[in-house]
Each structure stands twice: as structure tokens, then as C-alpha cells.
Length: 237
Image (cartoon, rainbow, N blue to C red):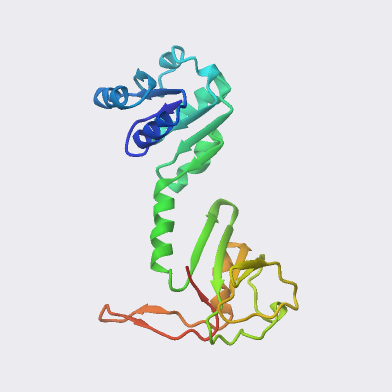
């Protein structure tokens, strides 16, 4: 079941329909209902996902999953109805702001995705791509996965893992070298162009600064960007 056929919901409806999934869609906008009927194979119910009456006609107790992708109030109410009244096993909800994530989960959502938060992460990742790449971030649990690259002439070359300053509550998961991955011990010696995969606290991305990295990019008073040379490690794509 999908609630909301907006900028996120409509492409998902088309995608799942093309792959033969049985879909039930609740959408309040008549024009969008018509578009779904013309381009996708789905049972369409015109109305609000927060309306208990419309739920009674959808055979919601037979649904495997719910994606509720409309506004905050409807999403929260839909989560409550789906979980408490119909026992839908998997509920994925859209949160418009990060502060709504906890509320969505309290309402019954198993997975909450905040497009605003994900977009912010992508933009910051692009902005900081010369100094950091965040592969995954779960801020609620203070968890992050990042990749750090050892530059060809970095001063960490020749050092062992136990000699570099790894941030608190962070661990090295693997080293990528010459097209393969390795599981390093404390005596593992770093080489130029090694790529270090770290996970743990959101402080993981401080590794380069803790090792003496000078920011690659800064904005001068005139607004122009300048580059500085890395002293040690740099974050990269």
C-alpha cells in the first residue's frame, strides 16, 4: 500500500507497477488518481490516508507493507492505523523534518526516511568531497561510515595502524589496496593511495584533522576559494 502520489510516491508507484507488484494507492488528488490509473496497475482509493473509513475498504489486513509518503499529520495517523488496527508488518514513512523522525517511529513506523536530511547529507558530502566522503550516517545513534584516503606523499605512509590517531569510538573496518580489501591488524603498514574504511561515532570524519590535516578548501574574505596542501590524510571520494 502507498499513501501519497506526489514527487516521491508517483515514481515509486510506476516503478513497482512495472515490476508486477500488487499495489493499493490512497491519494486525495483526483488528477493524480487519474494519472495512476492511466500509467500503472493499482487499486486506487481517492481520499485521505488519515481517514479510518477509507482503510476499511482497502483490505489493509492483507498488505505486506505500507509506504506513507504524504504530509506529517497524515503520515503519523496512517502509521497508527496501519500498525495498531491492521497489523501491517512493514511500515516505511516519510518525515519532512529530522525532528519528526522519533514521532513517526512512536506512531508505528518501522523505517523513517527524511528526504530533507538525506538531501542535506548529499549536498554536504559534495561540498566536502575533497576532505570527506560519508558513506552512511545514522545521526540518531551517533553512527557514521566514512572513507579516508592516504595521499601519495602523506606522512602516514610507513606508519602502522596503532601509530595513527583514530578518533574515540571509531574502528577501521578495512583497507582498500590495489583493487582488493584487507582486514588490517595493528601492525599493518599504510601505503600511499590506501583507502581506509572507518565506522563508529560521527567523529570518524575527524581522523584527517587529528592526524594533522589542513583543510583543503576555505573561503577567503573576498569569497574566493583557495586550496591548501594536506599534511597527512585527506578524505576523498
